[in-house]
Amino acid sequence: MASTPRLSGSITALATPFTGAGELDLDAWRRLLQQQLEAGTQALVVAGSTGEAATLYDVEYDTLLRCAVELANGKVPVVAGTGLSGTDKTIARTRRAAGLGADAVLVVTPPYVRPTQPGLLAHFRAVADDSKVPVLLYNVPGRTGCDLLPETTAALAGHTNVCGIKEARNDPGRMQQLLPLRGPGFVVLSGDDPTAARAMLAGADGLVSVASNVLPHALRRLCDLARAGDEAEAMALHARLEPCFDFLALEPNPIPLKALLERAGIGRGLRLPLTPLSDRHAEAAAEAAARIQQIEQECRDRFAA
Image (cartoon, rainbow, N blue to C red; front, top):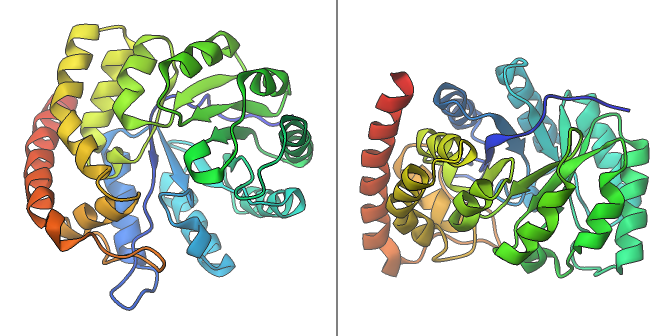
């Protein structure tokens, strides 16, 4: 039905920068996008959970997506988060994203309502049947309260307009159940930074990353190494990145990420009900920022070479 470049490699789930007054910081947004493109990030996700999508007004959603499409200019796919708790609303948001130029949509399992597996099957089929762009399934039970099981994913993988799944369970067994579904029209992506290297070494197509907001060169290199099967180098880089992943998990995403972005001059703060990183983590934030700067410089030099 729809077509887009195959989603693979290092994909960033973008944070949404705000000003100190809580408005969109479009200058910071453009700089974040440009940094990602220059670092070799291979696709951009706009208005996902890392982007605080639940707090965005429609006009803000439109502005962020339109700007990302304009700056990407066809160089990499732009994927818009469109999953909502109701099927009709998800379809409407998906139509909106397609109209704004998104190359694909990321559709999370409906939060809060906890549908059955037949309900999830019917939901995703309805969205995919209607969509003018490919649909990437998104399973993150820790946030939504429901789990898209492998057998349901398998039933959806044959839909001509379902292009893959972002699986955010940090469970190697789950990834092993999904990898046989890979094919020319269906990708399996990790949605969990700490386990992504192992997932890609096992055959996953790439990673939708939180950490790549601040480590775009490093995550591109990690994905390249793991997807090439270079286990020694991939796991060595993963070991260096692990303290950064640990920091990003100290409080709910994107709280620690936003603290690092603010240190880097990209936006200021979050929207309620999220609050700034606790003061007790200030030293850890400084250490993480220093580590990130060093790793990024090394990976940037390799990327340039």
